[in-house]
Length: 306
Image (cartoon, rainbow, N blue to C red; front, side, top):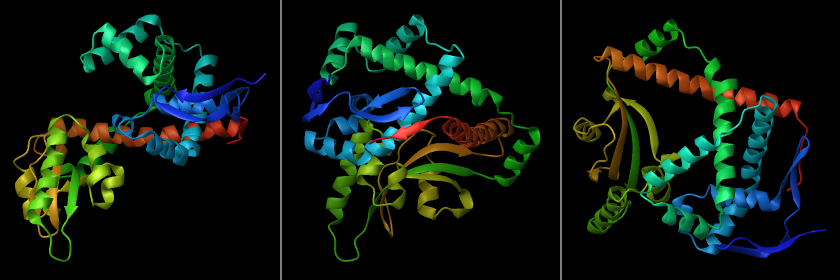
């Protein structure tokens, strides 16, 4: 018997669909259309939540295939965790909830009301937190904890990255070729800066406002060596502490707002070595994780019906 519903959450209505419509089979488990959209709702960013129903539907529809692939990968990892008896305890789930409440300065009543507003029961929320904890554990056990970085690799990295380098994100407002209203552009940059000071994500705002090609990756320019920076950039970055955001400043190309994520300086050998280790671990983990997931896929039965 099919169960018919008219919506996936109270905030986002859809035409009547069959909740038990299977969109993927992963070994002996299935993923339904309802599960797919409920998970997308659960992982929705604050920026997405501000969209209208019509805009949100379009974003979900455009990304449902890619998100389904992610869900298949998650399902495979959870199946591995089950075979290895990896689970999340009640204390771990309670600790995660307490961390979320503290982060957003909510008491228990406010937290419950927030869940209700988003269309989730407390038990459903706990189940999703449990899955996240289990995924972290199994990835750590099967991938992260097996990575070893040698002293030689660290020395090579440090040798190749000698000198000062800055890891920067940028929100860029391109100066038009023809006449433009400088004050209007500065006002727009000022509004974005106020959003940043209000706690909004630099990455999200870069995706939304920046004219730079790096906008799609949250304005990430990566590490830039000191000698490759323009005078304007260097003057600003050299005065910025790590983790800070610059005021808008002009170059001949337009108006820039910078976020300094990290600073590498070979003069501080201990700190530089620690950063080198972190970067090498991150790179190796990304490589090994992809290989592990590919192996899970190759050994599994996966059928997509979306």
